[in-house]
Length: 470
Image (cartoon, rainbow, N blue to C red; front, top):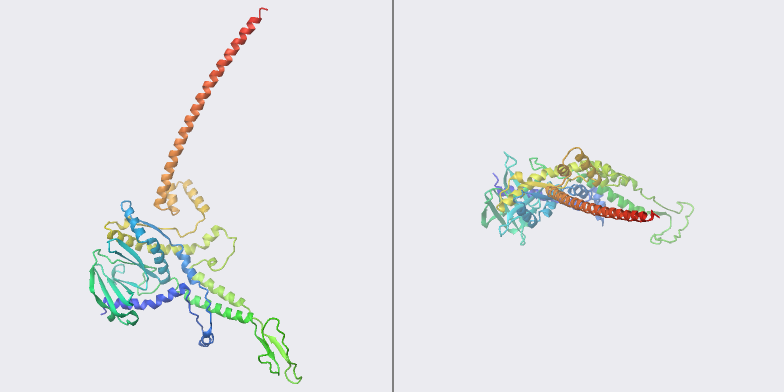
C-alpha cells in the first residue's frame, strides 16, 4: 500500500504538465498544430507564430466579474479582522486565487502564523499543492501536500495533517528527482499543529471524484488550435498574395537577369516561332475571405461553449441599448455567480482559521463573504428599479441590499440620512424663527404707521375746524 508521501509525489508530479499546458494557453504560449505530418515538416522553418488568443478572453471575462469586496466576521471582531485583511493583502491574493481556479480548475491558499505569531495567508499555485479527501466523506480533508524548489534547486515537501506537519526534502536537485524515495525526512521531521485542522484551503470548480479536471479552458483548447492553424494559413497566403508568384515561359536563358522590383523593366527575348512562344504572367492572389469566415465560425463556437457573449470576440454594432447588452451577458453573469457561490464556503473557512490563529473565536454563521454583483447594471436602470421597489412598499434598506450594497454602505446611508434630517430640522426651526421675527417686526411697523396716520388726521381736523367759522 502506497504511503502518504508516495501519494503526494504521484499527484503533484502527475498534474504539473497538465496545468502548465493550461496556463501556457491562457498566457498565449500556444503551439501550432497540423492535421498532417507532411505539413508540419513543410512549415517547420517558419520564423513567426501567429496566435489569436481567445483563451484569455474566456477567462478574463469571468474573472472581471468575480471581485471579493470584503469579509465581515461580526461587529466585535471586525476591527481585528480588518487588520489581518490588510496585512495579508487578501484582496490581491483573492484575484490570483480566482484566476488560477478558472484556468486550472483548482487553486489553493495556505494559512499559517509567521515568526511573530501573526496569521498569514498566501495564494499557492495549483501545481504546488494537492488535497486528499476521506473516501467515505469527500468533504473531510484527510491530509494535504505542498512542494517547492529551494534556492539551492533542491526540493522541499510538506504534508499537512490536523494534528501535525511533516517535513521532507531532497539532497539532489529537483530536476533529477524521479520518485518519492528521493524525499527524506528533514532534521526536524515534524511540527505540532495546535489548531486541529488542515491549513490548506482548496478552491475548485467542481467536486467530481476521480481527479477529473474541470477547467474553463478544457473544451476551448481544441477549437483554439484550429483558430491558430487557420490564422497561420491565412498569413502565409497573404504573404504570397502580397508578393505574387510570377512566371516566364521562354526558350532563352533568363536566369538571374529578371528582378522583381518597382520600376523594373523586363526585356524578354522573343520566341523562335516554332515551339512555345515567350510568355510572362503571374498567379492570382489567394482570397482570404474563406479564412476569415472560418475563423469567425470557430470563434462563435468558443462563445457558445463557454457562454461568453459574442461581442467579446467581434463587434456587434454600437447601437445596442444597455438593456440589450444586459440580456446578452446574462449567461456569462450566471456563470460568474456559480463560481462565486462555490468560492464563498472556502473563503469562510479561510477567515475562520485566520481568526483562530489570532485567538479570536468566530462562528461560521457570523462570517459574511461580500462579492460585487457580477451583473453590469446601468445606473439609471438600477435607480429606477430601487424607486419602484420602494413605492411598492419595500423598505429602502432592503432595496439597497437587493442592489448589492454591503452593510457598511447601508450604515453610512442611514447615518447620512439621520444627519440630513437633523440639518433639515435645524433649518426648518431657523426658518420659523426668522418668519416669526419678520412677522413681529412687520406688526410693530404697521402700528407705528397707523399712529402716524391717526395723528395726521387729527391735525388736519384741527386745521379744518379753524377755518370753518370764517
